[in-house]
Length: 84
Image 1 (cartoon, rainbow, N blue to C red):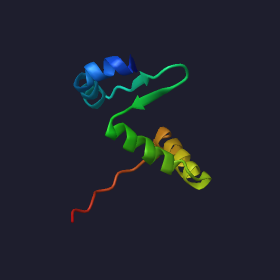
Image 2 (cartoon, rainbow, N blue to C red):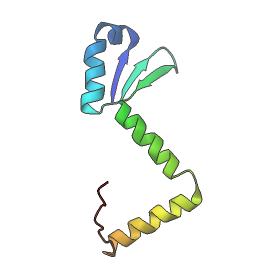
Image 3 (cartoon, rainbow, N blue to C red):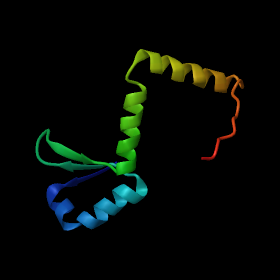
């Protein structure tokens, strides 16, 4: 996780944006006492949204927990994907 000020961010915006997107870093820009902005890559954001959706209901949480338990116990299986 990187931290910077708004002034430093303005000076090196391209460097910071490249670091966030290429190295999957999280950037916090401090804007005074108890204020700030967080910048993350689009890929990280999409991952967080997907996880949030998957965990949005107790039913989904139970399904995911069950699948993880099965894999840990060696009871997983593979399927061939159908090409369209």
